[in-house]
Image 1: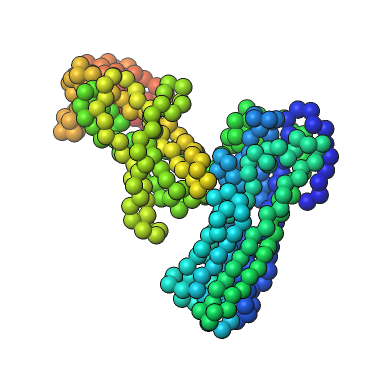
Image 2: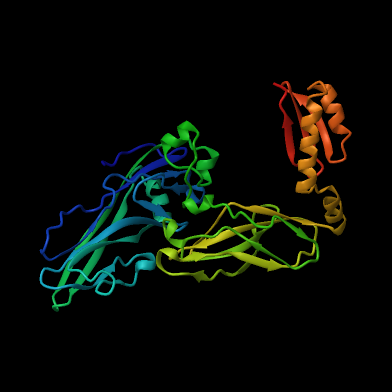
Length: 377
């Protein structure tokens, strides 16, 4: 993708493509290489200026943390004369500054094969700044060193360069773009904002229960999270409490990872004694290999006073009582006009809080908030 000049006034957009080396693999030929699992361009968006600039990947074999752009690649290897023992990968960047070792003999027990890996390659701050210099974006290419060791003692080395090409052009970003909430330019034009820094930003905590009693010790459980189900992979997870403005007010100890391999998962929960009535806001905070953290969507848990608990209990409708009422309603519908007359009868029933006519049908709500509709046609 060629680089082009553009005026620097206003917000900017930069489409970025990572070009991953594509080299065919031949059976029984010594080799170690990086191959893109999904050949093609990986585009991202850079908008705004300075600290207001934001970056987001809309698609492709890549994603990002708040600090680093992360490429998803296939590491492929072949030992021609024996089984592969281990593979060492070194980029000198981010959390990959130290060599990463993949133990192959016990896991694969083969002469050749491949494994998926995440490579932290470019700092987000550098990509943001790329369009701020005379209209041309220059982001350093990243050399990746690969060392394959075979059981025979043979050592195979390879170095590949993964470049980042960028084109700057003017853009009028939406508010979502400036805050890092959008994907590609096309998505913005359509008004669709599906992806953020990481898909984890869309995670729903789903607290259970969602109502607690004031002064009573309770445990709130949240939706389970598989670390390998996200790109980049989550390294840690913790529950946080948010204030009224959505900012983190309190962080709780990291959640232990249970299980192994594909069955590994986080089961976040928080035990506490509510000291004030009203809503308590929680979120999950995911940690990445580069030390950065990212929040999920928030969720509210309501803390009820003893008076509110008593009032709610008084308004509860048991399953037996509800079924008895529905049978009585069915009988009344054969006697009363299905309209205002039926609505008036409903409002007089002890288990009904309110009723009315809408769209030719009669609606009603039980004292515990459950809704129902009597179809008149």
